Amino acid sequence: MNLLNLFRRSREGSAGAAKERLQILLAHERVDSEAPEYLPMLQKELIAVIEKYLDVDDEKVEVRLERGRELSTLEVNIELPGAEKLQGRARGRPTAGTLLQA
Amino acid sequence: MARIIVVTSGKGGVGKTTSTAAIGAGLAMSGKKTVVIDFDVGLRNLDMILGCERRVVFDFINVIHGEAKLHQALVKDKRLENLAVLPTSQTRDKDALTRDGVEKVLDQLRDEYDYIVCDSPAGIERGAHMAMYYADDAVVVSNPEVSSVRDSDRILGLLSSKTRRAERGEEPVKAQLLLARYDPARVEKGEMLKVDDVLEILAIPLLGVIPESQSVLKASNLGMPVVLDESSNAGKAYLDAVKRLMGEQIEHRVLAPERRSFFQRLLGRTA
Ligand SMILES: Nc1ncnc2c1ncn2[C@@H]1O[C@H](COP(=O)(O)OP(=O)(O)OP(=O)(O)O)[C@@H](O)[C@H]1O
Ligand SMILES: [Mg+2]
Image (cartoon, rainbow over all chains, first blue to last red):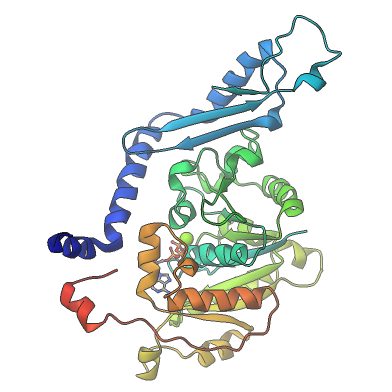
């Protein structure tokens, strides 16, 4: 182990972590604050489109976001009715898997 | 049925957000399902102190406006499975909170959680009022310093008149003092108010004394509630306070502040 690194790390301490967290967060916030909050709209429109084809329960929609330095990920999980619930419903509707990932 | 606790102070910068995070995490560590809510609209900070800022999607105001479901806005803590955070909006102003909106959200959370801890903004305006209105308990955070103690007294007045419990003539909000940033060495030298002095003036029960401690800054740098730092005196003091909040009888002890060791100073290490 490099002794110099040991010293450098101890000097940086937790402040290094603080700086990195702030840089990532603020880079995102500065962009976000110029545009209107898009996530509620995005979710609404996304669900509207999917509802044209499938039954969607509002309570079964999960949106997860992770802001990163290199990339961010947006994950939308929509739980759809399973085979049992679909039985007896109008034919011709798609019987997609129980989970749709967008 | 959850108990609603407001963490409030009047004066700014005394340690409300630090205390909300520590108390919320402490309750979760004791196995209580806990949600912490940031009421400081426009100045979102609780998410940073808890280290989940990068995962915030929706906020309290989105839920109140029906733009997102409550369960979508709650951010689950990655370390403590019993802890969730409801972040506030960074972009809107404090008028976005309405009493009805807040009540609806609290009613939904009440069934699912054991404790709801509300981080109040500073001041005695709308935001602070919203944070305390539905409270069952209040943690009044004060520093051993004249203006902070004076503001705490103002807040105690509001708690006994401007809350739902007060308006309905129910059992009053149970207010307890959390004396934060306490430095026994300076108290010893007569530079700072003593615990007993503050208690005598405010005449409320003591929930705990949190020492001035470097580990608080380190914890906020890392985005980790200070109660998870086992070597921290402030963390230990918060855990004692949490036990008292849950009704346990724990003797008060004033833990010493942490001083930098000679070796740490030699290395110029701060945290
Ligand atoms: N026990 C302590 N020892 C050392 N520093 C502390 C302690 N408690 C809080 N602090 C520091 O005091 C500052 C203010 O803390 P915090 O943000 O929790 O206060 P607040 O009351 O929420 O402020 P605001 O009124 O702006 O919301 C922070 O820098 C925090 O790290
Ligand atoms: Mg605060």
